Amino acid sequence: SVLGSSISAIQKDYQLSVKNELLDTTLAAANDAVIIIDEKGMITVANNVTHEIFESYGEELVGSQIEKVLGSQPLIRSVLENGKPLFGVEIQVKKINQKIHIYSIQPIKSYNSNNAGCILTFALAEKIKNIHKLSTGSATKFTFEKIVGTSPQSMAILNLAKKFARFNSNVLIQGESGSGKEVYAQAIHNESRPNGPFIAINCAAVPKNLIESELFGYEGGAFTGAERQGKPGKIELANGGTLFLDEIGDMPSELQVALLRVLEDKMIMHVGGSRYIPVDFRLVSASNKDLLDLVEKNEFRSDLYYRISVFKLNIPSLRERTSDIIELAEHFIKISARAQGLLPPTLSNAAKYILLQYNWPGNVRQLQNVMLYATCMSSDGIIRSEHLPDEITKFKNDPGSEQNLLQIELLSDHTAAEKAESSPSMKEVEKMVIKKALDDTNNHIRDAAKLLGLSRSMLYRKIKEYAIFEDNIKKF
Image (cartoon, rainbow, N blue to C red; front, side, top):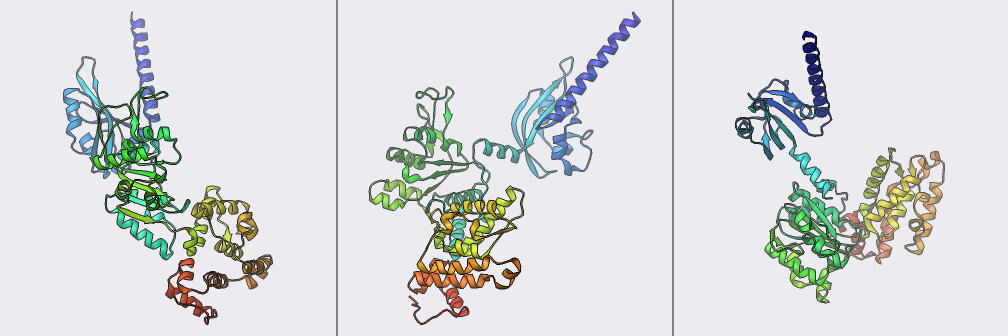
């Protein structure tokens, strides 16, 4: 009947509208870019992510030919012509000057099985790489530009590291705990292999019975507790990027032999496996021990040492680069305050003096934690001496330092108006610190300059500027 036909038509229209609405909702919620084109290559649908990627395109995407947007792409044409899907393709798009990673190009079939177009699902290639880095724990944040410190020692290490980064050879970084070894490892990676993963493993933190499988990976069922499908090792995950072996001095001797073989052959075999897997990675190692001393004691293989130490970086402790302390402290204050949505407080001169007097056994990492504590404890936008942890304020470097500190503390307790007139300037604090360094080194210019992180000529100028008693100063 006519009524029945009308009802059937209404139902079909309703079902079609529901399907279209469902499609629109699905495309809008998708995290990836989706484009649908017809059999002639014209874009009929483009979701929000696609519009964001091609924001600079300047024309309406829907209604444009796919070649006009992506450029000439024979692969897409081949799917339209032969109806065979494609997966995992990376192409350069000149319109946006970026690469996109196409997850899939799926053909659309009409009711009579003819090709009616295709669906492209893709994302920016850079986004894929970043997701991969995060999923493998390989994201890095430090570049050479982000390393803080302008002392002569820091600048010398920075310039040396930049030179090493230009070559693909192995690097050994030595220094005390907390001195910033991984910071330099990340900076070298971001300079030399920025598009690859940065895979770090602490050799001292992994149990000896597990470190082999952690490094080399394993096949399913290789040992009790192994995952059924197996697992790639850190070396395999570092393929195309950088492998960072922290505390390599604690690596078991039997594993040192295996690592040496990998460095020579650039191939690995999974635990329980039977085939070799080629790998391409740059090795950066670090240790808070003197590896050469361990070699002499037969606690570290000499052949491995010479293999991993083509380039050597010795990171100075914080007490060896005193002139970096305040710069680093203010940097960490900004980071701590920003994380809490606060304005960065200012370091009082009394607090600066205490920081300069302390010997920092935990180095930069300890200073960062101290500044986080001080930022939390500060009030009125100022970090005073009482806002520093007890182990810092109670530290006595020598009998004279207590009297100097007391003088500054008395001044720092004045009202804001009095402080403006009577608080010691940084020049006065600097003069006290220079005198302290000269006292500590028995008035040896060379040793005092090293302690302060200054050149000898700069220290001479400071002594003359501040009229520090020169009669007993020794030049050598």
